[in-house]
Image (tube, rainbow, N blue to C red; front, side, top):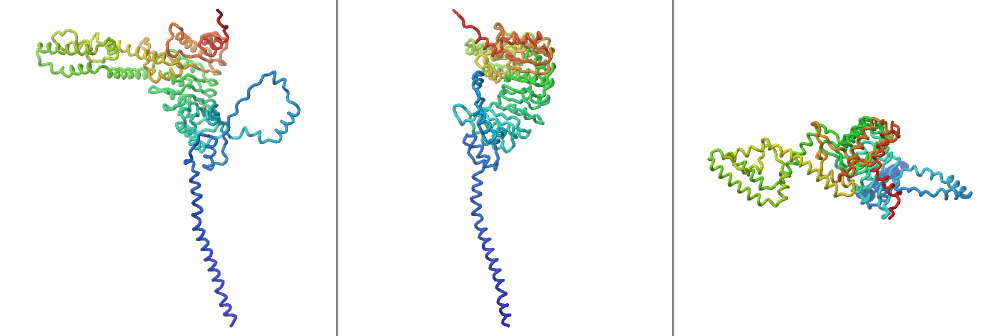
Length: 567
């Protein structure tokens, strides 16, 4: 019996221990839960402080890129290193005389065996930068070569590149770009400094060939290199349309490198269509492509006067009418008010006697004579006559000064008859002469040729240039802005060579002292070597002879080699 109470007394003890143990566990868990937010809060605050969007870039690319990669959780990121400069070439005599000693050979062998890892440093992903000479931290150019650039890298670039105030060029060579990453890269460019004018995307073939997006109307890129991108005729068509269309053209791109692609005759024709109305591109390379005679003739055609197509003629007429209306809107207000008054009073003159009409006409003449005397300081009157281009049915001021014959309707109908049509054609010609004169003034005010072209294209549409009319057709002057054209190693024969000879002859006539204009004079350098014709054929030699006086490099060398003038 004594054992039973013992057991009875012992039984509740384990239960109480379990319950107490459970309570202690619950208490510990509650304490942990209470202390957990206190521990999480500093971690969250630390993560928030490491948010890439909140980081203020300093303009030092090496530090900014590393910090942004760390904040984005990107551990194995490429390093920013200075681009190695080529070693200066020593003289051959010094290099042959200074032979390495045996100790130097043993040292170099031990270094190469002990540091195998150094052999692969060149192949590690890096971001090479070229710095300004004056400022050792200011990045001037960025080079990325041989490793894939993904969206997260471009996202980091969108944060750190805008802080580089002196960035001028970005070079991406074989970085595995896609059409999507190219769109991300293009969206990044407007964020960068306005000094960024050069972009090189070489060895990055794209399925959709959307390189033309880099040449949009609002693009600020001046130098674009798209070598070795497998661009075919379809890609060249998109690029040609980006150069110019009927209603607009690219006005910032100065050089375009399309070498080592798959552009054929159709692609060359599309690029030639882009050059018809483009007046900013100075440098074009189509070397190492598949262009034959048809494409070569298309390119040569735009370098000399060519016939306008029907849509271009229609657009030219629209622009001329728009320019004439703008010039009429700038004419003196008094003459416009007098003409409007005559138009208003015309229906009221029906029931008035002839004597009253004559008297009213004479009073209007005197009023107009006084207005003319006030507005007649001499040269300004001539300017008014030039600027005003009458349209059909508009009365002229000079007709109202003629003696009346008893009827007012006779001088009002004169502008629409016989002699009234001749001044219209003369003034249309004067509009063309004024536009030509304006282009010459703009050209003469610039010293550098690329600045000259940029100013001219801002002011004058190519369709407003002076045209030549032959056999009912309108011919536009050829593209004289393009200075450099490289067609090395294509498939051009003597048939295409003949077209370039005609273009070079035409441009050579423009550059003669008697007929030299103040504007651009055409090609300064043309390369047609390594094509399907003999380099010593007469046409090729003649092209070289015609281009020799215009080549600035050869002219400079000739001047340097010339003996000094002796007195």
